[in-house]
Length: 121
Image (cartoon, rainbow, N blue to C red):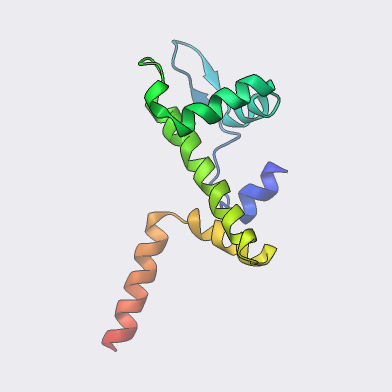
């Protein structure tokens, strides 16, 4: 299923299947495995994570900020999608919005340049 998401939403730029360096020496992981493990987490652990996201002041000092920011980004995407569906948007509209959220900065710079060229010609 991820391959389809990668092709449609990320336009092939997704990195969930790519091995990433771990925090320890000689360790690596693929983000998709981490997400899969998270999908099968216990209910108390899930509630703990939700609590930490809502109350970051309780995070241990050793907690990796980068990971917390990553998880927060995904939670924001879910909130965005939920809000669009709540507002009565269609599945196609929500998908288009999510695709726009995942466009690289270079895409938006190209769009700005094209718009600038149209206004000057």
